[in-house]
Amino acid sequence: MNRQDRLSALAHLVMERGTLRVEDAVEELGVSPATVRRDLDTLANQQLIMRTRGGASANPSSGELPLRYRSGAQSEAKLAIARSAAALVNPGDVIGFNGGTTTTLTAHEVGLRVSAEEDFENDGITLVTNAINIANDLAIRPGVRVVVTGGVVRARSYELTGPLSSLILPHISVDTLFLGINALDLTHGLYTDHEGEAQVNAALASAARRVVVVADSGKIGQSAFAKIAPLTAVSAVVTDTGICDEHAHALREHGIEVVIAPTP
Image 1 (tube, rainbow, N blue to C red):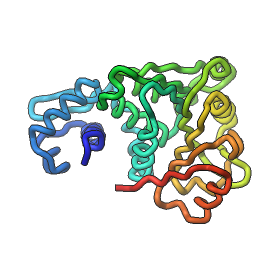
Image 2: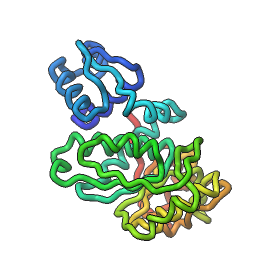
Image 3: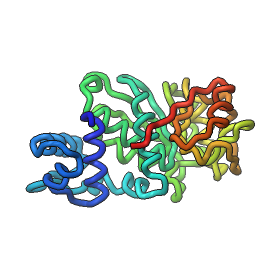
């Protein structure tokens, strides 16, 4: 297990359990106590957790919302997708996120990368989002500048919607948008369940040079109520090993790169 994966696993254990002893982390991860202590210190410096005598506890200001999303269905597949998508981010990038379970996990993994890797120390990233939970999670990370669209919060997804939310987007440029969806129709494009979210997501996609869809395989080949964008807007899809060959082939026929995230 490399350092990035170890930090992510430790952060997940602490937030999932509330508290974590060094001895338990050693047993779970199969590394030395000294390594666990150094990694916990790193996470504490990032304000992801709080160090305690003999271990660590969750930091309520940074862990509550990501934990809420992590408890959803298909969490292992979503976490694998998030880690593969986060690996696509480079120092200096301007990246975007809409709301949703997979995008929230992806943003969290990006925060871990930026805080842990030396390449980001002198050249951080700018993050644009309409999701207030993602903004809350990433705002405390060193090396991340957070830009939030305006609008009215939709409680179900934590996304800002309405006319105010898209005012800023025509005036900025995003290198890569990580877009969560409810459905990917292999003929007609990307869909979500709410027309207000679809409108803002479409504006985010229009502001991006590259759109990377992050979605579990169960959403591919499906349709939903409100259209976000056609397939021509998509550069890549990051999904899990459950995608069938037929769906993967259809996406590639549209010129879309398919990244299949290995599940641990």
